[in-house]
Amino acid sequence: MSITIDDMNERAQEVFRLIVNSYIETGKPVGSGTLSTMIARPISSASVRNVMADLEEMGLLYAPHTSAGRMPTQSGLRLFVDALMEVNNLDDEERRKIETIQAARNANPDNIFEHASRIVSGLSSCAAVVAAPKLDRAVRQIQFSHIGDNQTLAILVFADGTVENRIIRLPNDIPPASLAAAANYLNDRLAGRTLAQARATILQEITDNRTQLDALSKSVVEQGLAVADTETGHFFVRGHSNLLSDIKGAEDIETIQKLIDLLDQQETMAKILQSAEDGQGVRVYIGSENRLFRHAGLSMIVAPACNANQQVVGAIGVIGPTRLNYGRVVPIVDYTSQVIARLIG
Image 1 (cartoon, rainbow, N blue to C red):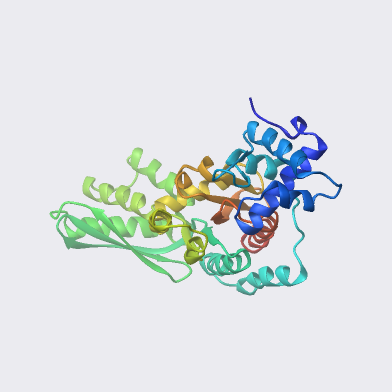
Image 2 (tube, rainbow, N blue to C red):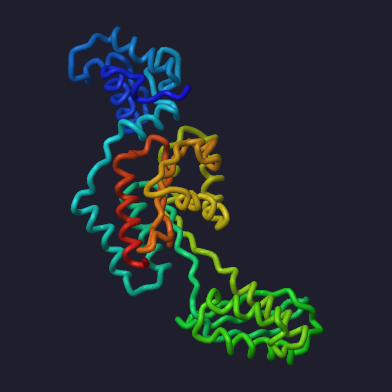
């Protein structure tokens, strides 16, 4: 049965809140003697121990060592975040630091998101993960060139002046004339338009045999469209070393190092930050609620950046120990996502 805050009386709530806040601050268990001096109303150590025993039976606390104090379980942290956490207000200095992202207003989204990751990592003292959106940019020109081994290079020149190369798997015996015909056909229909705007029209023309292209050129066109559409978002991770600041032993170091290696893989980042699109506003994942962190003892706070049409245009997250200061980090992530949304929305 799931425990709710209504299952706890006022005294239990106070004891529970003090234990969690102490854990977030120190990372250490707290005993009944210490707690009895922290509670506003006088209460004996024996009474505190009784309350702690009840909370432990509810699955909200545990003792890491025999005769030690108590620490919150993952379920306890979840209840605290959902029902008892006090969200801090950002101070003026924190707001100013986050708003420096606006200095990149005229830069491309990658620069905006990269700057945001540095700011958030610094403010949170955790690892910051930021996802820049996939860009559907207008295409100025596309060219094809054989490079051997059944591979053809597709060279894309975008309207913003950037150039990107993609590899297409094509037989070596496709004549240069077919490559040139495919490029001319695509350039005629793509110039000044995005791939999304032109794709449906081009594919329909091919289906209706209205292209006046030979079969080989049609194949090049289809594969050229496919490879040109493989652009994904860009991901930035800052503050890796912060993940190593709260570990206890060699086993923890190995676990965290594996996680850091995973964070450098774009596929992993896509899966992590996709969670931002699954809900509105800031979301908090504690410990094993995210399978990636099952053995790492980490939590993630993540939020989408949405445009005026409420479409997700990016996401920003913070990864840190389960004892991270949720009440402080949540507004940092939330406000940063709002600033980013204003810039690129």
